[in-house]
Length: 272
Image 1: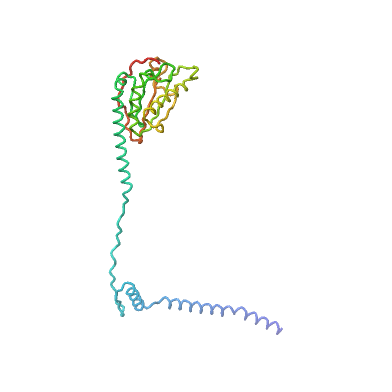
Image 2: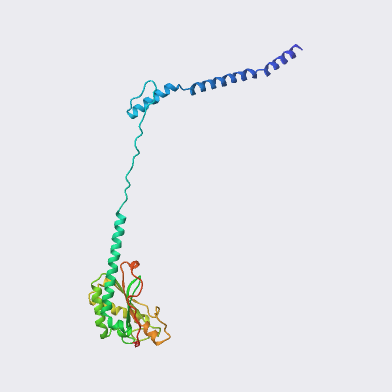
């Protein structure tokens, strides 16, 4: 019986021990807040003196040992000059000048060719136009070749040589295109209109090389009947399609003036 009572008293004492731990925790928490408050409380006068001393050291302005405010004159804002590169402007101006000179050269050359070929232009055998690509001379094949032939006729030599001399004094690239109608051809020399149109273009290129035009500037192309300018269902239409086109390519094709240089009325032509 006494042993049972002693055990009961020990159990009662064990339930009350948490009060001691709780009291210790509250005491430590109070001490913590006291320390935090003490750290956060700064003497305003000492802080001002320290601040003035730092400002004086970095600004070379005498400070005040009694905590007087130090007047610091703010430095004027730094204005950096704006540098605008002028090289693109110069390049644009140079490009504009080059386009203008190129345009004038093309116009002068077109006028000179038109004056040289005036009789053929008036008769409708030659048409001169200008577009985005450059200047194009459409020469009817009837004045250049005999029917089914690719050898230049004697009467065609003089006007082509004159054009070649004009081109030789320039640096423009030149493309010579041969065109035919849709009438089939099959001879021992030409198996089709493709061969005929290509060799006709090459004959004109050869004449230009022989008269001073640099070969590196020339190109011969045969299109057969694939690029007609008129219908092939009439004799006049087929005659218009049989032609040689000489295109003088502008160095600045996007600046070329669109539109015709001369409006030509087509005349009656004879099939070669």
